[in-house]
Amino acid sequence: MFGKKKENKMVWLVIEKNIYGYSHNETFTVAKKAYSLDEAVAFKVSLDQLNDRDNQSYFIATDVDTAMDKVIDLHNKKVG
Image 1: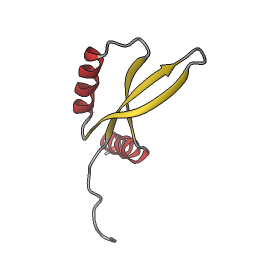
Image 2 (image 1 turned 90 degrees about the horizontal axis):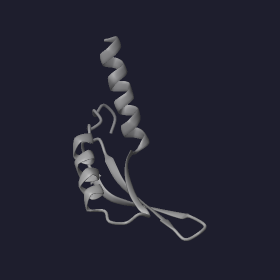
Image 3 (image 1 turned 180 degrees about the vertical axis):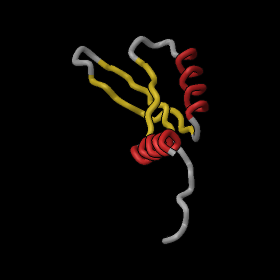
């Protein structure tokens, strides 16, 4: 618990967005889970190529901890 270094597992999500009906109701679903940005981009590109629906799209998201870890790491590299 204390004194342990946090395991560095970044989580990237490929989110599927669907829009339905005249009121443009939106639904979001996790389509894929990746542990690197490159892997997430590859999943998204593949899903986009297979997608034959006008009302469906994909985007990449991450959890807050992953985003903050990345920002802090990049900051530390820049000033260190």
